[in-house]
Image (cartoon, rainbow, N blue to C red):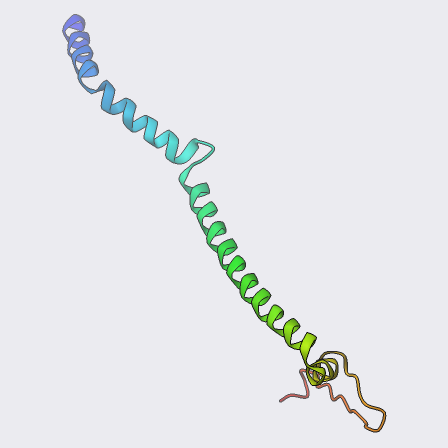
Length: 106
């Protein structure tokens, strides 16, 4: 009886060892390897985020370079920029800056 059972088991083992090995290999690669699926998905999300950051910075560089060119050529643009960004004023004018707290906005 034991010989027959071991012979049947050996025949089944010979028949299914390759598909079993392939399934075990894929399970290992998908979940236990250093480059498993979860890490690959995380890397893809990070790549997409960084590509959007690159696009945003390129647009900002473009707008800043246009603003720099305007400041190089136009004196009124320099004066307007100084007033808006740094609060500069002429000698004969008064500037009032009103800051609202979040509580006062309602």
